[in-house]
Image (cartoon, rainbow, N blue to C red):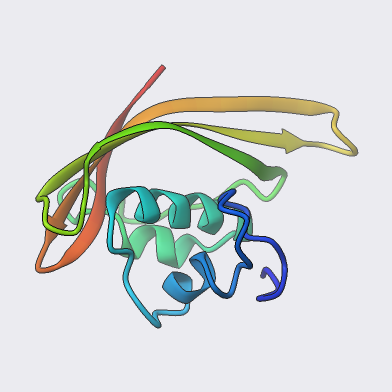
Length: 132
């Protein structure tokens, strides 16, 4: 769990409670594809598999999701977006997410992805992505 007064892992510079924490707690829904993607990154950082499943489109969502507790997701860089605004039906977010594992900083890695999001009934969902 992340303290509401801590800096949000998604990189906006806001506190977790004012940023992604409000989405994770269900107080509001992400209004754009980029904010949904940022909140999903923060859910990985917080170990919130339930939020990840709830924001995954039903057509591509796995039945179960087990997060690797040895990975610490610590940095998100958004490289660009295409559509994904409050009135769009589809959007794309190109990003790199960085992680560490093991004691100290023994293992490091990153995932570069261009994710596709769909908006249905006023809510954004993660659909799929191209890694690379």
